[in-house]
Length: 418
Image (cartoon, rainbow, N blue to C red; front, top):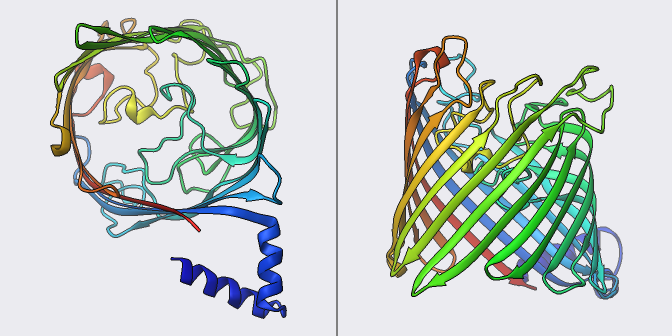
């Protein structure tokens, strides 16, 4: 890797008409301590969906190249650059095939600069300006959609403070969200979503048993998300128990812009969210119970919906609830698993879905789902993931099709300092 990098640098310098030594010195004055990263993630995804005549079969590869470096020999000043290419080796899935016969696999062929930012940190403060992946807490509200081959990133200016022990504060202004989609245009389901949103997040670790997090995510023209989250871990005679208790409300947006695709002159939003979960591990065994409530739309425009989340991780891997139904959603989960150590880890999750309120037909059964995943680290750079999801529909009036999905994925990661 070092010889290739030097060869390319020398070639560039010769084209520029400079001596390679002088230009190399000039380059060293600009960047130092460079670290390169490479990820290659091939994945096969199969989808059998009852309301489509054909099964989707998607073989895709994500290739990510990254560079982190210090700038101008200034302590705390750095830059990050990352480019991701998604290549499809098959076309038997929507949206690559537009015939309408196939289910959707949201991994379109595309290439994009996914991260390009400058940062400066000093005395507990950090400033970041540019394009950046962002994940806050469990990604329920703000996530990078890392499961999809092309992730979601944010064009932002952020100020972070970690100068007090156990305290973390973040404030960010986001002017564009780079969605996972390849379709050009401006909107929630297009490549870009221009916005003028503000993210406020604070967390304080009182003790290992309790971390308190408060947030206000003001998504322009959609809603303000104001919430509090309690998390912690305790050791009960060898049984390690972790818990989450969270509550949030979604109110009318305090920020709006008539040029934004989400703009509505009469936008109303008034609903609530809560989530409680307990997870435990003991001698390799894994167990957990959870209940998540996303309120119905009530007198507002939408049920509790988090469009900037990593939604695949939330309510079943079959992705049947990427948008919350108007009647809301309640998701009761049971998790069981076992960690085999060097032989990998297996997890199974059962979801029981119900609406928050009955629909017009008087129904509330939104179905159930079984998810299973096996993860194995082949070596320090290469991992294997086998994953399965089976969704069974509930009441017919909700029009949710029975769906089966499975994935086979390899993930190779390499990083080195030059």
